[in-house]
Length: 181
Image (cartoon, rainbow, N blue to C red):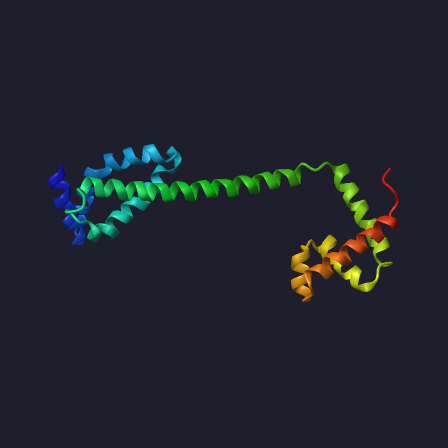
């Protein structure tokens, strides 16, 4: 097999598609063995596609004096599989975080939503009593949902000024709002 794969790989490097098909079919058991040790089963097909493309594109880099064809294809497979595993893990974490957030958003009870809306209405009633500079910052923070850093950047204000004014505004509003029942 060693001489056969090496000869086929040199032909692949020259752009021979027939040799590529033969090489890939001969190397496929090795590729799949490396994938089984590295990836989840559901990722095999996609990773194998990436490896097939990599073998075709990188065949010119094969140097028989540095490694056998088997070692070369195993190293490419391992490298691509690890990249794929990292990418898949990151994607799974992102999808899980998004799903968790969506679940949390939908798990709020009608009474919790009502309480939030009631608080918003009370805030609107009392927000007009704030100085304009504080009112603008509270509206951007509480109603629009901007962070203090985003507000500072948007209004071209020092972050410390934004923080102080928002804190003062919320202290004033806390005095104006009725105590919780």
